[in-house]
Length: 277
Image 1: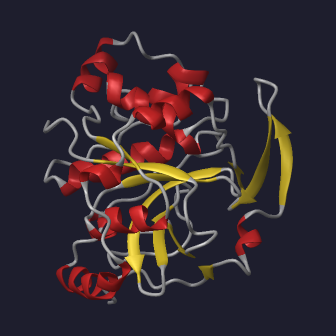
Image 2: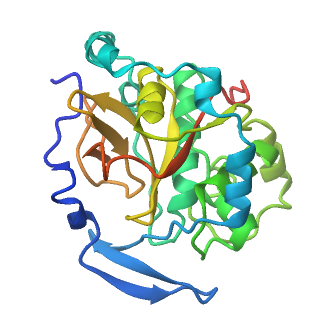
């Protein structure tokens, strides 16, 4: 078996529109209109909406390049070979299924939640799926588009609840549940760094940081990632059994080339609360 994702298709500046359509527009309860793509019989809302609060949060975060020097491109190929051999990419730890937003316009919370779920596993903690709606519902009810930064800020301030006490796609208000409040204490994003430009995202991948990444042209937030030769990046979507599989046989992956494959915004996370629950 290959040590990496074997892409069935690589998205670049010539074919990126395939990810957009066919779509139709739907009005959400807040009155906003977002594109919807039918995929596997499910509605996949492309609902990433930049917000003023999200911009403020991103501006206030420590910038990744100020904490970790950007790795020069001349070093990338050798480092890729080393990480391939050692199997230390983010997706090398993803022996579990991706998050699935399951017909809700909550990509903006699922990307950060999956990054947090992955971070725990990478830190040697038991697998605990973090609930996207434990941020999306308190922020906007779970039926509205949003900004990955809003979810990141919420998880940093209050922590994420696990899916056993707040199901990933439950838009019921569960914030007052004592089990939810207790769970949040065990899953806080303590270290969050903003990322800007392909070289910073690439460096974070080479240093094995899970991340949430947003694409304005796609109106979508996913997670990442792995750097490949040829200025390509492998990310993971929040659409369940979709896309390519990693070396562990798990689905959800998409390979994109610098250009349309460069996130417009995003952040990476360091260790979460070191809790076994």
